[in-house]
Image (cartoon, rainbow, N blue to C red; front, side, top):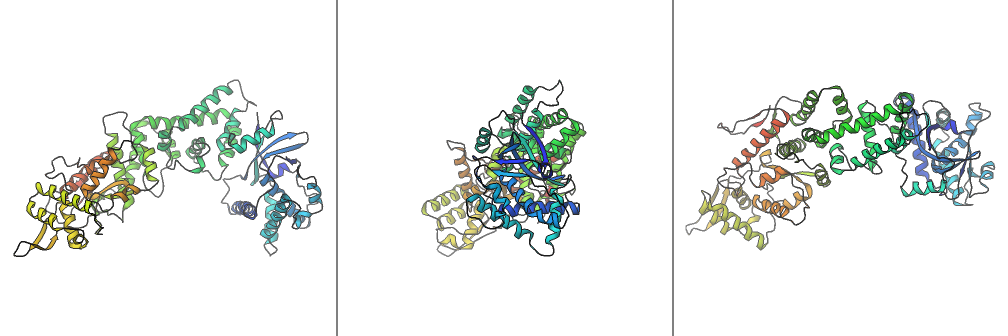
Amino acid sequence: MSEITLKSVKDLLDKKFLIPSYQRGYRWTKDEVEALLNDLYEYSEGIKLGINRNSQFYCLQPLVIKKIDSEYEVIDGQQRLTTIFLILKFLETHAKNALGIINYPVFSLNYSIRTNFVSFFESEGYKKESDENLDFLHISNAYKTIENWFGTDIDSARKRTEFCNLLYADKFTAKFIWYEIPTSENAYEVFKRLNSGKLSLTNSELVKALILNDEDKDLSFNQEDIAREWEFIENHIENNEFWYFINANPEDKAYESTRMDFILEVLLLSKNIKVLDNYFIFSEMNSQIKQNGWKSVWEDIKATFRTLQSWYADRKLYHYIGFLMNAKVSAKTSLGSLINDYVSLDKDTFFAKVKSLCKQIVMGNGEKICFSKLRYGLNNNEIHNILLAFNLATTQNQISETSRYPFKRHFEASKSLWSLEHIHAQKERQKNWNEEELEQLKSDMKSIAVISQQKADIEDFANYIDAEKLKDEEVYGTMMAVFMGEEIKLTKNDGGKIEFVSSDFEKDDSLMNLALLQADKNAAFNNKTFLEKRRILSNYENAEQETEFIPICTRNVFFKHYSPNATNPLIWDREAGKDYVRAIMSVVGKFVGAKSFDNFDKQSSELEYGLQ
């Protein structure tokens, strides 16, 4: 088995390293060198200020090596190792003159492809620009970058001393993840696997190697069983339906190589340990294995996965926790804290807490929320969360035990951002109507007229409009009023010809006129009438291939599912809006444990409705 441990720069000082010929030469530029110096300095300053006390060391990332006689062949990590070597060489004079360190140690480094590498350093050729070969050119440039970074001002000596103390310390220092392969293994084959991605030194792979290492294990250790169980967990979290449920940001690049890192991260968060840097998970797990033993850590990993798996299997928890993960809030609920609660509380109390967290998101932290006061453009996140809860609860309330809200499709749709779509267009922005669109518009109005109390006026208005007239604000508003069931007024001359039109149309940016739709589909719906939008949805549903995701309640609202007794199914009027928000309040209220209120039965100029 490979040896995996942590070694400080100080631990490397008595070692000899060889960069083999199959390795790429030294190619770090000014940017990479400065980034490393800045990171080390920031860590050191943080320690002094007490900011980084929870991070026992700065991680220099993995160093993959194989011991050959008295040397270590470097398989991966040579760029960073060479840069640390150059920093130590730069600090050498300061250590001797200012700090009085006579025998200043620096580990030995050699590049097998450069036969004069050692003499290049002995003659201090790296201190001046060298164009002898690309390696020496980059090395001398990197050294110059280090010189310039430390500078020569009054603060330079302090920074040099600080770096000496950091790199030679036993605690609060810089450490490599030391990954030593067995002497029997072919170094070049390991190198190829690393570069092809077949061997990935992620946190979870490193932790897995620690647990599967058969050294210092008792009789209960069975390497094959553990490897099989680990693979089972990995395979399960590759199921996208599960992955998109548990992860609020499932396509984060941090989990591209392996999703197992996420499980380990959640485990640490459940112990109130915040992940601080790239390889913090490994270093923390390494410490826990040393402190509590491999069995304890492995049981914790399995327990974390089983908890997430049980939430996924429970339809009720699936939708509630899914809401917490997907709601638009400034601070997401931590899965780690939820696991903490799950372990410490009984099942009913845990569910009550989850439900309470959902209620806080919908209600804001108050005892009452007036949905009627929410407006498009001002309260988009609050409206989004209400409509998301409406869709989740509606899906959960379906009879079928297999009915689940598709978080994967929800997230994929959200790549183009979720948008709030007006059920009936509100933008008073005239479009250029082509002949086909105009004929469809007139046909729709005449269909509405058939069951309208203003049948004659609507038919006359439909015959009156053309593309040019619709550019007029009053004409456009009157057209919108027809589709919203509002009264229209026609002023005619003695010959019966329309001279002027007007209506009671008012813009509606309230919850009564909003549904959830992904942004790229919103563009297709833009400035469309209620019936036009319904036709677009029908086309999506009748497509031969399922390519669109329309939330269930958005579909329901455009087909007036919430107004079964509507006198005119072709319009979106105020009564339809009331039916819609009544359904929202009823379903969401039950979902979060709140009661609805409204003044719809009262003669009031201003509608009021919401949850309390």
